Length: 117
Length: 128
Image (cartoon, rainbow over all chains, first blue to last red; front, side, top):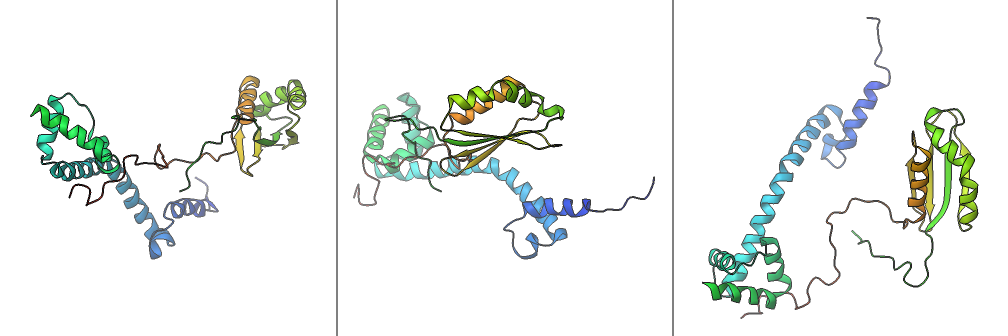
């Protein structure tokens, strides 16, 4: 195989990696060897946390619903039980949003759930 | 992030948001075949039908063809028409003509509201 100089290809490869590490701390955004590791971690975290985000948002909504329901004298589990019995299929995201933004509507929902318990 | 408000264009008077089209093509390249056909057949008619548009035709030898659209808002959009047929090129041009000038940007969330609460936000003193 004839000798091939690196030429400009190395710079192009390194630039591509450094472009993905914009905003990383210190040398992680300026030095290639550190940036490459930082990029690998970042991509790994991004993939993992796309799945985590869904879990965390649901847990947050449940916490909020729990707090709001207890103001009306119900626990979260009882509320969910009552909603299932009343065949109200509002999801946890909507319930949490209602409890914050439309509290009197949420009170009505809780009342419907209580009626079935 | 500023939300993308609807433009109300057309509620009273419709104003075409496209200001300028620059059709860049290559005289000899294979990928420019579709746009060359468009230029020889349709573009004169198109320019006549749309007097508010300025249509520029530029040769870029040795490069793939593209359409650069500039809007009244100052935004521009570049569409590569490499290897497209005449119909596809015409389709893209009509898409640009009817487009608002808003930049295609990835939305952080697909919803937005100026009035999230109608009944009044929850406060700690609501049920005290």
